[in-house]
Structure formats: structure tokens, C-alpha cells
Image 1 (cartoon, rainbow, N blue to C red):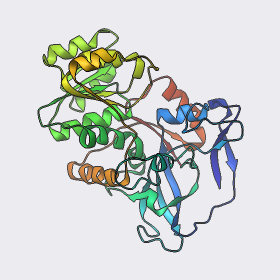
Image 2 (cartoon, rainbow, N blue to C red):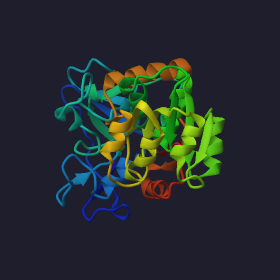
Image 3 (cartoon, rainbow, N blue to C red):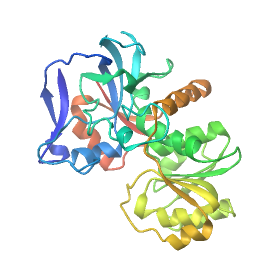
Length: 337
């Protein structure tokens, strides 16, 4: 079989397709023939040697991607959760089935330290895959394990929101677009930000109630308060240091800021501002299998179709990463096997 691999010297240009022996599932394991994987910003950091629970070094060889869809081709002894022929998604954390996160659970992430889904044939623990809604395409299923589940957990597992509450979604990448779709299904009022008017109009077509171009309005926190004078109930914070101060200005007293990404870089947080508005600032590290399966039930009930913006052959992963780095996408970028 063939697999994507990254190693030192790190970088997109050094990502390669390697020939490897076909794997065989052991006890409690399943062999999955991959159909599609989707890109996350984490993957870009990973192949640049900049991501991991413990830094990558010159000895590491990474098979990237946590988010995949495939068909179970063989099962090992003791497998009872899935059968040959089932279509499944790979789960971001292979050992986080339910309950609170722990270091052990969070150390089982696909891509690094566990070899990821970027290969024609992949062996996973039966606990690290889940069946998926039949109405979704393989490409759409591949978008669910990280971006969709992160948005789901932020909105419904960690926050305490009610219909009619105001939520702010930063940007138009995968997590924020899923957040928009989930928030609309739950009856929340949605505000979405972007530097592109064209992307904002696409978000409007998906049901966004209010649009803010943060390039034209750098103080977008004030714009949020023009829409919601008391402030937003919830903010999906994906920018990090480049946006957190605006989020702190935009959130209501006692509101919730879900910290999901650092695409705008790291930065400082003024504790006085956080104390002054009694807001809750919480990091979101994807979620458990239990959360994933609850999310899939909601997706099926509301017939929510993930937004796949660009599709590349999996052997053209370098071009896909270039598109991600340039911010060309709206929703998700997918590689197809």
C-alpha cells in the first residue's frame, strides 16, 4: 500500500508518498480502506514539525491526518463494534470513548503520536472508529472527526446556550462553518466574521444572520455590540492572539469564549478584562466518541450537509496544503483516494 509521510527536514515540500507493507489487524483492531481524508490546520503544523504532545524530532516519521472515511475491509479477533463492509469515520482520539479528557486519552490523537489516516489501508482500534450517517458522501464524512466535533463540543457540550442566544463565529474555515450550521439548527442568532465579502455572502446563503468584514472593521468587537448591545453569549475563537482581545470586548458579562485555534498567532490575554466581564474562556480539544455519535444523530435528524469546498487527489496533498495556507477555502478541503 501507499501512505503519505512527513519527516525531518520538515515542510510541505518534503511530504512524500511512500510504499509500505499492507497492514493486518490484530485483536480488537479493524483494517479500513480509506476513501477520503480532510485537512485541518493542525495537519499543516504537523508536517512542518510544529505540532504534538511533545515536540517532533529528527527521528519521527509522521503519517498525517486524523479525519478520514473508509470501508472496513477486515477485522481482528474480538471485534464486535463494526463488521466488514461498514463505512466508518476514524476518530480524532483513538482512546477517548467517553467522560472527561485525560492525558492518556489526549495522547491518542491520530497523525501524531498515532499514525494517521493518510494511507490507502489503515489499522485502527475498533474503539477508534464509528459508523456514520448514510446520506453523507465519503468526502463529507471525512470532515466530521475534528472540525465538526470541535464545533459541536464548543456549542453543546461546554457552553450553556438557549434558542435565541447570540453566537459569533470567526472566519469561514471548517470549524466555524460547522458552528454556523449547528447554531442555525439549534435556533441561535449567528454573527460570522471574514475578511472576504464573497465568503460572507456564502455564509449568508447558509443562514448567517449578521456579517462582519473584519478587514473593513478591525474593531469588530464593537460591531458585535451594535448587533447585540449586551454582548455575544458565545464566541468561537479560532484566531488566538490576533483576535482574542476583540472577543473579550464582544462577549457579554458571563459569556463563553471557546478557544479553538491560533491561526492568527499566539498572544497575551489581559486577565483584568476577563475578570471584569466574568466571562468563561475554555480551550476545546475536539471530543470523545460519545460526543461524535451524538453529533452524528443530530446531523442525520437535521440533514446537515458538511461544506466541502475543494477536493484533490490524495497524492496531490502538497497542492491541498498550499490552498489551505493561502486561505482559499470556505469550509473544508478534502483529499480523495
